[in-house]
Image 1 (cartoon, one colour):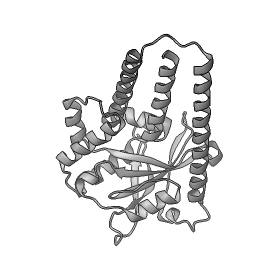
Image 2 (cartoon, helix red, strand yellow):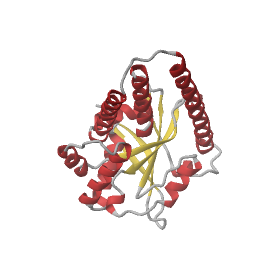
Image 3 (cartoon, rainbow, N blue to C red):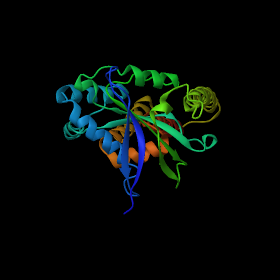
Length: 267
């Protein structure tokens, strides 16, 4: 089977260490998970994780979404022992960018390894309009992806990190894209609130008691939490959702909208 290589950049946690250009090799079967796997190997070998601290971190993350969720002990044990990689799109693969996108890869368990803030990676994320504080070593990679059948890895070099690179002004495009997305989300939220108010005042809802409504809402929240737990614990599932929704936040927003629609259609 033929293999192909692409270049990506390592931004060390230590500001005194230089950025590095690394090479990743893949074939048609490993084109999607190849970089995630490379990041996992790196994160597994550089620092030892405090499993109890990471377990508490996992519980805190899940409970922050739903304080009442019950997390199976088996799921907790599995999550606390698996090396996960967070993927945050800095520039989404949109048609007006010729489907070119840039993503930030970080260690999901960096805090539990007592890693420090990566100032350079954080500055890059903030320059893109992202409210992200990066902990530990970080990687940046590029691709072209139409979210359908077309997906290729692109070289991303140290020169591409600089905001002075006029040849590839992805940083400026990323910032504008983030601002536009925030405006769209705010407009959608305002429109949703308006439609919800109108629907409640004009439509006859089912005669549902508060107790039944609360029970149904809890059922929907457990469904959402189950999907997010599957996202964290099932790598194949996670990669599929990241491809479709861009990030965990994007997938969570989709689940929340679906939850609200189900609730409003029923109660």
